[in-house]
Image: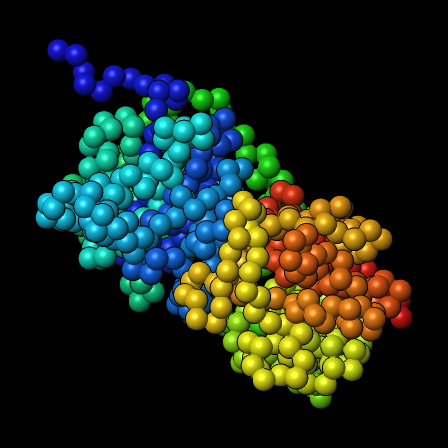
Length: 564
């Protein structure tokens, strides 16, 4: 009898790796998934990553930074989970709207179909309707049936196994793996081994239980990634293998490391990519991890150190500025220095004490944000950086506070502000625009009553850069960056600001929306604010031209201070 699942080559169809997590959240599924993708990519495979999020919000853009951390933005304007940032930093494939979806998105799509009558009046159920929809979304993310189809799609399922909310996702991928056959899908399960200090040992029981939960719903893991604060001893690996029905070579240790860029080699040396290629019957060239080894060498052998003050209001939430932190580290590697980031709470700063709190830093960065809390501290920060000639990079709100500060203290526009913070300000130098043109040519409109989730300027947009400016020396003639903001610099004040000496170095072509402001280099060595989010396009091997220039300016400022 012929086998129903004949051997396949990489050209036949897209293969899938489903990554699940157990015991506790925040184990690093995103880094593990991105690292596996990076290793497979180094073998010459075309890889993409898809993140499934079990919450009901239609996108992360409506969620609090306290709950969700950073919202990552793609070129095509999707507000996505922060793990997509890791994906883009680890592999060459760019993420799109189709690479991340939530339970909310699935139910929204199913209900729209039901309302249209697509189900012909049948009862709409979790199985098959919701699970089928999830599978369709996964296939769309993998580009199946399009020229963008990939060799391997790695699908990361948010939440932990055993949670009620992620069950539809797990059921959908179980069905999918059954339909595709055993050599077209693999399951990687991330789990936790706690160290019990009183007993002096690693405990395997939580791992056994979470694998059992997985098996109860019909999924057998092919590989276990065992997170712990140390390497897992051989006898523990053998025990885990026995009690989870995973071969011993599939029990892989993932211990804590000082840089995430060590993870691809850690997984490769334990044979994870070989196991996956074997399971999926993929014949590839050997792995080459030279780029990752070079990165690790650069991080471990810096030629100096600079300290950057990042002045924001989510300073206690490490995930809120994830991409900015990484972009600074990437730029440090390009400048051969270690970047130390001090997160300074903007609520603790005012004009009187800004110098005392900020004088010790080599450069200052004010990242994006929203809401009135801490804004005056950011304005005082911009004033300090401008007056004391400290390198300053303002991103999104950081650009807006620099504009407000300049309007108040240089252009003579007393009480200038953003209408976001003071709707009755006499000089609304930052305000809500009502109409703009998207990258694809469509005209978008909004007002104060629009759905919050639909009122932002999102995604990649291009603008011309003025000659003989700092921005031009960084970007050249055209800048194309990703946006995520609601308020803009008010076009009616641009002439007044220009007359007062502020350089508007990039404007959108149609609406004349401000993209970049800066101070002339005759006045300040390095002072720039950008309305977009450059951190989303930084990669560890190239950095980003704006951050590279910023860290270079920090090094030069430090050297000048030492000479003085």
